Image (cartoon, rainbow, N blue to C red; front, top):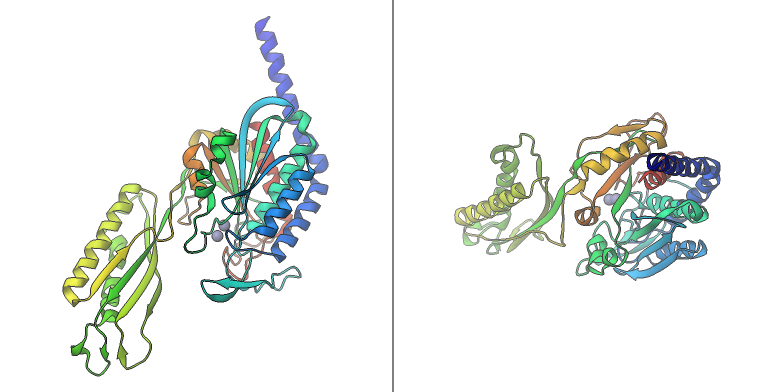
Length: 422
Ligand SMILES: [Zn+2]
Ligand SMILES: [Zn+2]
């Protein structure tokens, strides 16, 4: 008797799941029309990190119109909506990031951005070159679907619209870390979190890497102080440019000569170098910045130590003063995809995309979603948004990066199916 009851309850709940999925099939076209319209509007009006005022207002107005309870102004411009289903169940969080980048858009699209702003003292263009416009629009669509079918929703869904994923302006805090510091997980207590990123990958394909999926990222800055002299009399000074070249040569041997890279990848890059004003002046100072990417915290420490040792060596060899700073502007931990959660959700993704699912390898890019998935089990999926049949297209952060609208329904369906099945 008891078993029959359990079985019929299970059947009942399986039915509710397939009902909701069928309902999505009915509604998907009209939801996607709105998602595409929202995305184009957000794309045309991009905003940099911690300045997503218009985007946050658009999200807030939408969630409010759906009868979802909304909290605003979290970590500057962050928005959290909580949808309470009519049936009991767990709380699931889904996150979208809202910020754009200081990039001059060159896509030539009818809804391309013409926005400019001041960034680090310079006049710059602003563009959704990482596709966060798509993330916001998709999550608004997910909220609309579940809000209109609240009677079949088991549990609560927490919609996180996060500012400043690309990093806050210098001197400000921000992003996922700041939302957590402001207590969003303490207040809403979600059990798991899902996130999605669009990517220059095959159209409509969804995938994730189990376990450590994206690298830890740390920016470093090195300031080399010498003694300024005439370019014709270098012996009267200490040349910080020559010292910089030695430093750069040496740090390029860390990964190639010192790290055991078998199964444990790492990257050390120099991305910026600044020194000098004229051909015939050896300047007093040189400054460099770069990034370190790792998947293993011990290896990261090892690389920090190697850089410090190289700095000492360059000081001894050249007589210049070498000052090293790590984690400039913060640090992003490894983005970890919970393995049992991924195993559980794989089937939902296969179903949502009609089999267009692929397990992918880890990436050396970084994400501050990592802060959320450090607190609770998380799953971060990639959605391929290339034009149909195109394998290689300009990638995220390129001024030519485009998102094919017809691929977005696979992203929306993936998030909805994972939520229903969980
Ligand atoms: Zn990005
Ligand atoms: Zn991004």
